[in-house]
Amino acid sequence: MEKFAFIIHPLDTTDIFRKFPQAKKLPESFLENCFRHLPSFAVSSITGIKSATGAEASGWFIACPITSRLMFDLPEEYVLRKISGAAKLAERLGAGIVGLGALTSVVGDAGVTIAKNVRIPVTTGNSFTVATALRGIRRASQLMELDLSEANLAVIGATGSIGKACARIMAKQVKELTLIGRNSENLSRLAQEITASESTKVSVSTDISTALGQVDVVITVTSAVDTVIKPHYLKSGAIVCDVARPRDVSRRVAEARRDVLVFEGGVVQVPGSVDFGFNFGFPPGTAYACMAETMMLALEKRYEPFSLGRDLTVEQVMEIDCLAEKHGFSLAGLRSFERALDEREILAIKHRIKGAKAMAAGLS
Image (cartoon, rainbow, N blue to C red; front, side, top):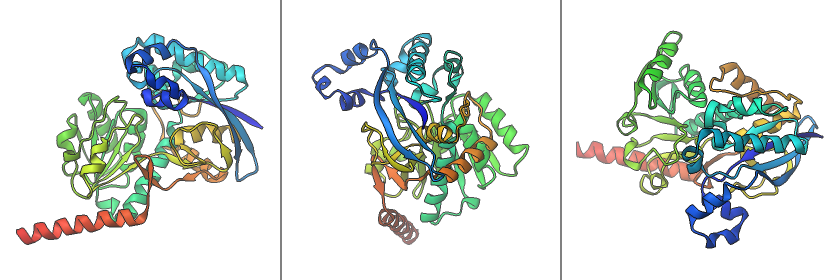
């Protein structure tokens, strides 16, 4: 039986309430600050993972008790020390590899320092996160009858490890690529790299609100604590894949824009009769792609830092996608704000878009 562990942390206080419902009586800021002083702890045991090859794995969810807000507000050295403590607990429990979840894979140098502090390999899971996000984009485009080869695709957070990998791969498949981020110099450097090898038209922007007006497909993967995409930013018919945790897309988009398709990237069906022992808001048997990467590396007995640091290669993404096929990890449909999207809903979105276009044509 192969062993792994995966580090999670509360995105906000609602995640603390999920494990400790009695804590709802406490003021949120007080609870956050009290919770961060706890040592890392095992939230649950994970059992029942069985590969299509017959290999089996089990593991643990380990909590690093720092919310998303405090991940950025507290000194980086302190946060890295807390994450390292969680990784050392994984080592003591007997895990052969440990994965970093949510912002634990972003703080500092994207896992490199954490890996130096433990004797077992560390992975961020970012390679499979990219692979599943792109699977989702292709599936959503088919359902929306969008030809990617004629589309303008934007990557928000384009200079991060996931964003760069998405941009490099999708540059081969779309007509136009828009790179969006905070640092114009880094964006320009990435644009030059892509245009040196691809014929795709590439533009850059540091202003999300204006850059998305003519974009057909959006992959958003920032490390922001608050949402960055608001309802009026998007064109009618846009497809948005939100890979970020915490989310980049405001819930108001789903409520106000019935003419766009928003789905969560990186939701995976895990093979076997898996029991996570913990409710993190997903249907039974499904997990984030970053979790799944850690599991499949254990199943493969690849105890190595597969995804680490801020630069992923296209080859890494392709390799982990092949391992997913081998072991039976698959895209768990399309989900949006904690619920599954069925094809009837997507058909309704298409009808609303066509109706709006017909009305606009009639008025002109």
